[in-house]
Image (cartoon, rainbow over all chains, first blue to last red; front, side):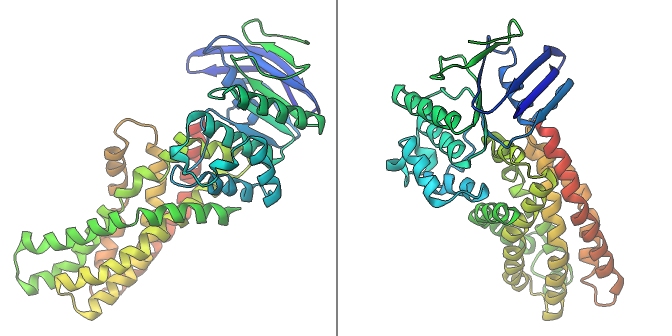
Length: 196
Length: 211
């Protein structure tokens, strides 16, 4: 198992979002977290990423994780290429792997455009480039489809399929349908894991 | 890894280094207007005035040290990669000093000329700034981490930073007196304490920002 959560509870301010949550994610698997706005999808992902401490329960993550958050985490004044290259250097990614990831998401024509001029969807694609290039076995994606057009979503779907075929795992919180085959679904409103 | 963080923040810091320097020089220019053109008085009080200007100039960049990275999610990305918050804070302090300390020390040359300081006083001022500016940078990053996300963060940062910087001002200005050998040592001790403690304080604040 790459990620195991046992009896996890999440407290945001005075509000208990969920409790007694168990889940496990192994190589090649995918888990889609759904539920209404504010139910704690993002918080659950942040707990899985180690960005948020659970109010109860324990989290064990044995694989390195790539985090795709709500914001792209790029410096606006840098060009897209410089921006993703900074993270590639930090992750020890080769130039070729980065170029390939940029081609996968179709952002190579935008390489010399400063990040602040990019649209929401283009920035999203660039953030996914970092996820792909980083080569972490576990992808934690918070609303990955936000801002993506149909073509971008297809590219994301292909990238996730390749990642899982190579033994990676994907956990995504979303309110939009994601192109993920054979993914388990966790509906936070019911707090039960059902296998699709 | 930490070197990469330092390089990124230094590039960002140097791009914005003009503002504190310009502020410092304008403050040095205004001083003679406020106290009059008495050359002896200016030479006597000018060094302390430059220290005060340096202290206030340290406040200007505080708002852009941590808040933009929090908003953009950059700090989350660092945390997921297992980079310690203290390491991130230390990198920010080093980078902030590089974009703030040396430019300020350079600006002190025309600043000293404007106030008619003699060479010996200027040398003691530069030595004091070399010792004191790392502590100012450390305080700046710590206060930035503490106030990020709060309403009126800029004004609050001033209220938090200035009292903490009082010892630097006292010993920094004290070290300008050629007969006071102890002040420079006390300045160094204070600066060391602040600089060494800041990564831990700022790291804890960065950690708290995520909850």
